[in-house]
Image 1 (cartoon, rainbow, N blue to C red):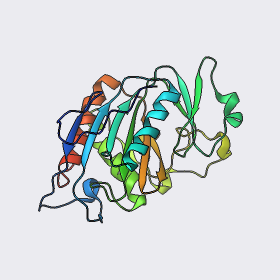
Image 2 (cartoon, one colour; image 1 turned 90 degrees about the vertical axis):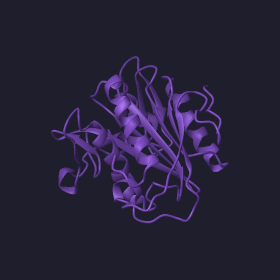
Image 3 (cartoon, rainbow, N blue to C red; image 1 turned 180 degrees about the vertical axis):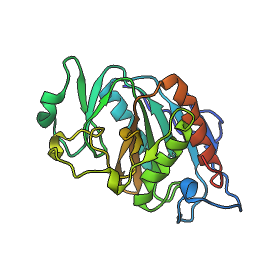
Image 4 (spheres, rainbow, N blue to C red; image 1 turned 135 degrees about the vertical axis):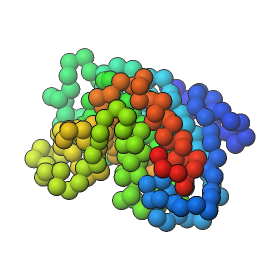
Length: 245
C-alpha cells in the first residue's frame, strides 16, 4: 500500500509529487464559484496539490481514507489526481458487491468507495479527490454548493477541449434502475457535467466528523492533455479565491 505523503508546513513541495500552496485572502470580489457564500472564521489553510501514480483499487481507496484520517489529525487539505493500475469497477458505500457481481466485466476488479453514489467503470478515466475540513476556504460551507463549485472548476478547465453543460433538474430523469445496481454514468443527476447530453463528469461525497471527501471521475478525455489544465485550474482557484477558474 502506498503511504500518504506527510503533511508539511514550510516546504514548497510535498513528498510523493505535487505542490503545497498558501491560500491568499484579498479585498476583491469573491465569486461563489471560487469561494462560496459563507465561511467559518479560520486562518487560511495550505492546500496540497498531488498527482499519484496508478494503484490497484484497494490501495487507491485506502489512500483517500488515510488522507481523510490525516486531515482530522491536523494535516493540510488536499486535491489529488490519479488513475487506476488495472480496469476496475468502484461502487458506492451503500451498495453491496453481491448485487453488482453480474455487472463486473471478465478480468476486471471491484472495490467499494468510502463515498456514496453508484457504479463507476474505471479504465482510461482521470479521477480527482478533494479532502478538506468544514470551514476550509475556499470550499463552500453549504453542502449543496460543493458539487457545483468543484464541477465548475472542472468545466472551466475542460472548456478548451469541449463545451460542457452542468446538469439541471430537467436534464435528469427519474432513475429506473434499482439503487443497488445503479450505474453512475448512465443516469445523470443534478450538477453532473454533460457533453452533448452524455455524462462525462460525476462525483460523490462522504463526511467523517468535520472532514469531507469528494471523489470524482472524468471520462472520455486524453489524460495527458487535460491533467495540466485541471492542475492549473485548481491551483489558481485555491490560491486566489477572488479569481475565476
